[in-house]
Image 1 (cartoon, one colour):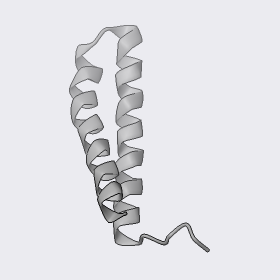
Image 2: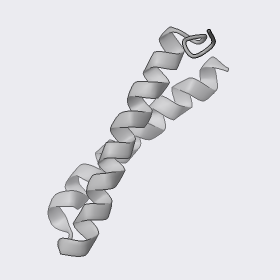
Image 3: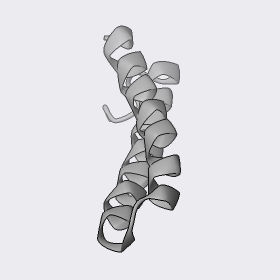
Length: 60
């Protein structure tokens, strides 16, 4: 299960890496989508890191 959590964290980092340049490069309606992808990437990276370090965090 740790590999799934690690993949979740790496996917979050990939979203951040792709979304940050896109948020500055794209025009007005699409830069909001890219900024939302960056936010989702931060949340996924944090969640994945948390679950790698403490796998039973959300279980009682």
